[in-house]
Length: 70
Image (cartoon, rainbow, N blue to C red; front, side, top):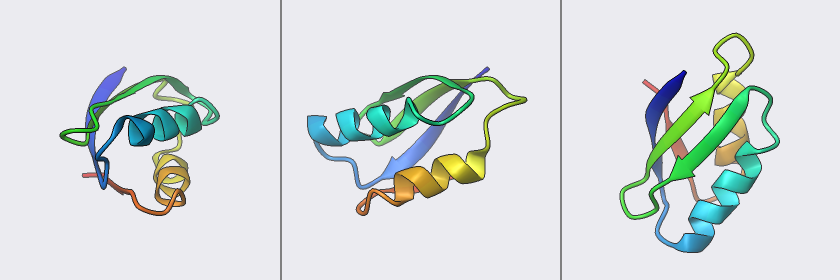
């Protein structure tokens, strides 16, 4: 499955790389593509494995980002 979420606080290529790197370690995520200019992030994932609360916790823990889950 794929979904687009908003991550607030992204503003450069380093933000993109950092978030995408963290996503590699979260079980269930197949791919993550961050548009640092808009914060729109496309996540491809296995619906029965991905824990969205963990995803939010991991990205928010980076310090300056905030995952907006609907």
